[in-house]
Image 1: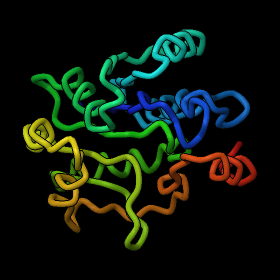
Image 2: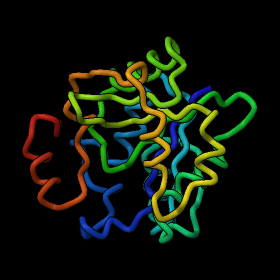
Image 3: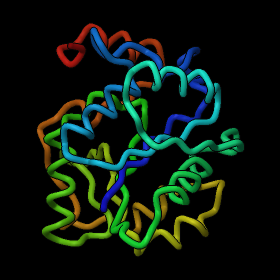
Length: 201
């Protein structure tokens, strides 16, 4: 079992409004598009970590007809690592081989990219698997369960990035031709560019 943990607990300060609720096409928000993409890729277990305005986002999910698992991070202001750990606590179990870590601000990842990441993990067992384009790395990031103890012991001031960087490898880097895998949308200008681009359909 490889569940996805979607981090959607933040305050979207730079955007000025909840990113999870922004339209990502004619029928989806950022959050619902992410969930539909992972469903299309065959990821059966989906877990969303909520924090800021959690009730609003829960109501949005209920209205969408999607039924992910929900975990609430009451300490969301402590930063992204706190949400990852809340998600990890909910997702981990005897049959959990790894987790896919996904940010709600990258809604245009293709299902083919998700499948490629999982297939590379199945083929290599690399502890970190991620899409790459040259020197740039993108979303989602697959983290093997062997790294879960390191994540739980991570320094909150530096988060998960040092652990991920320490365990990347050529075996786990998956070249993909998917602009959405490398598109983080954090500001109104970035959103406007995405909205006007070919990905926004």
